[in-house]
Figure 1 (cartoon, one colour):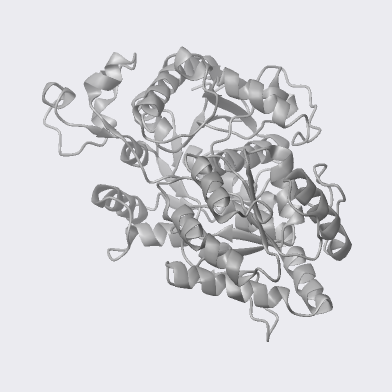
Figure 2 (cartoon, rainbow, N blue to C red; figure 1 turned 90 degrees about the vertical axis):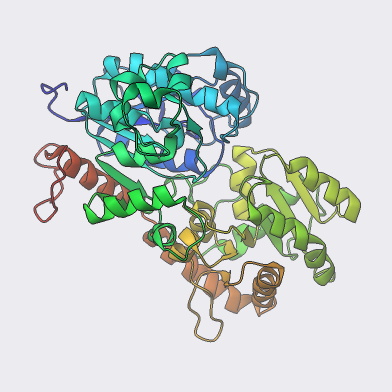
Length: 518
């Protein structure tokens, strides 16, 4: 489509984004809807593509109420100064009452979010794609899973990026009742069993939303090679059998790729405007204590720059075993490090936030543990003011908080699996290598062992610790490079399109890359 456009037009379709560049259109600065790490990943990618000169457009639901709330939470603090004038708006908001009035965003697989997903995809299919006329569509996660099937029917190349593994299964009749003409692309969907024909399938054979996105896309991507290997390992936990089979099919066809995410460039303690005192690798020993005091004051904790602070950055989600592991061990951690007055802060929402507050009350730990709703300023301040990031997640698909934490000199404490394994190496005090503290057995004993290792590190001489943190910060600022991530993304776009993504003088070298047929 749109073959007269010199630079290919890319439509990014996502259910969430933390914020968008101001130059992308009127009101861009007030658009923020983040349920978790996916919003941060999409934000970083859209910014990087936009800055690289890609003709990138964004489609997402119009969460009116969420936008209104978040515009007060993040008054410009996360908005890099990108005021380039553009000939037209790049932001396309799906319009439906089902997502206008949500006070918070939590993209689970309950019926309310299924309704949101279907309404959003209806708007993208019926209105946004005809308006944008993209040359390429890049979809994120199960809430966009039908769009690759529609795109294949229309001959539009499509990339599908996996994030969560949970996915609903819906009948074609249910999908069609929500205004999506699934009959036009039903043969490109993935079903619970082999379909016979449309009539037989419509009311008896559910569509798997996530596997449909993988199945129908021209190319599928994940965010972690270790995460992907675990999904496809016959001895691994996790992915449903049909999803594993389809991923293997994509792998054997050469159309399954991994692109590790990088933090948005604004996550840099030397330039982050949310911090009380910015700092770099050489000045962290002065900058972090100032930010710790400011964080403690903001979270109503006793102010003491010498105590160790641990930061919980992810959703307090009862369906994830990582939260349960932290809740089960919190009393032991506080008791074990009572003398050190260890503190824990959580800047996170989720269905277990009230449970955490009740646990704090039961332990009478108001002076040791604090929790608040997600707030962009406090979220960034927590990285700068904490010493460690709690990441006891069982199979994390991206580990973005680990990557951000290392940039801020805040060392991860995490489970050695998934994306965490890809970006964190256990710190060896003797050799001075590594960047965090990893445990290999996912249980309370394993997590407590990693916390013990972190606290042993904190007890070492300050100058030695400062040397290691300086090294970790310096390495992470180059290792987690947004420019490399966008280069790989543009490479993939060019492969799928089989044509240059950029002008000849900026075109990336693709001579050695295999082409992908539409």
